[in-house]
Amino acid sequence: MTDLIEYGFDPGYYENELKDAPAGAVPARVTSVHRARFGVVSGAGEGFAQLKGSAYRDQHSSLYPTVGDYVLFRPSPGGDGQILRTLPRKSLFARANGFGPRGTQAVAANVDYAFIVTSLNRDFNARRLERYLSQTLESGATPVIVLTKADLCENPAEYIREAETVARGAAIHVISAHTGAGLEELAPYMKPGVTLALLGMSGVGKSSLLNALADEDLMRVNETRAVDSAKGRHTTTHRQLLRLPCGALIIDTPGMREFGVWDAEAGVCEAFGDIEALAASCRFSNCRHEREPGCAVRAALENGALDAGRFRSYMALRDQARATARVKRQREGKR
Ligand SMILES: Nc1nc2c(ncn2[C@@H]2O[C@H](COP(=O)(O)OP(=O)(O)OP(=O)(O)O)[C@@H](O)[C@H]2O)c(=O)[nH]1
Ligand SMILES: [Mg+2]
Ligand SMILES: [Zn+2]
Image (cartoon, rainbow, N blue to C red; front, side, top):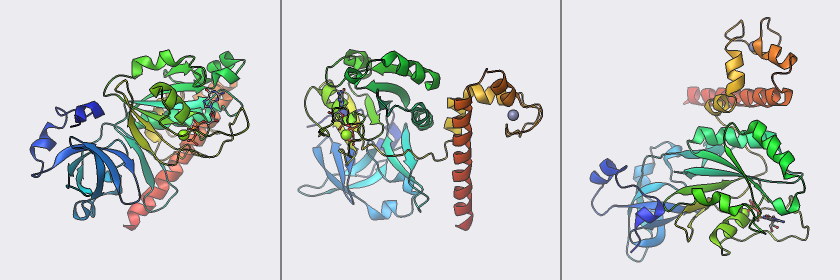
């Protein structure tokens, strides 16, 4: 018997859903997503499930189960069980999926802490970090910045300083999965029933970190000749939720090449609170901070109070968010 509470389930939070559950249905958590099948864990242990078609046909695609979701599940002896319903999410991390019919892809649900993983080498990019942060703030999870491969880096302080300029209060930790340095700093997050997700570009060392935290090789790691394999090929191909020996749940994700921004306006505002605050004193309420007279943002740029790079990434994010919102509106208008 598996106790789903060990997989982060909070029966109190879902009291009403459980009360109204159809006969034979039990709560389960989605641990992996395959083409038409879902890996699940429930009181009956680990197994597979398929969607109850009639229950999902008319629903918005965002309710399709993703890794980390809690679902109502009907086990079936000796075969795939059935997922009857996705339970409400406490957080949802989604990323842009081009402008296809689905729009976004749900990456991970019910995440408490999102570890935004970046390596301390030439691939370090503060703007990218900023985008991950913005997306995480929007998801409802708490972002934690993890700078990896400390053993390869001679000047971590420089990177930390740069990360601090975009962190917006998120904790920053410097670790090495190879030497174990800094891992003790992550211990406070690694509590039984707490769900963590590893996010970041391919090759930054997410799976290596997972293995180091688990103290065993649960995930395959990219082994290339280069010592500093920032340009490694994708190694992790599936999102996967695992339970660590310490009792924390952890979702490993395949790194991507670029990180889409979808509907991030809310996240943008939070991550760029300082710029939004400045904008509040622009003469025109709809100021685009381009050439308008009485623009407080431009003034701050000119007197050096606002960093030009930070302003550029704010504008880039804002434009992207507006463009995607426009596409979405058009699509909704056509329905
Ligand atoms: N020197 C050093 N190398 C590391 C460290 N962590 C990871 N690496 C190396 O970096 C490469 C990529 O590591 P992975 O853990 O596979 O990276 P990943 O982020 O899981 O990549 P994807 O699964 O493709 O998203 C491997 O060659 C690791 O050995 C570290 O702390 N120090
Ligand atoms: Mg990996
Ligand atoms: Zn302005």
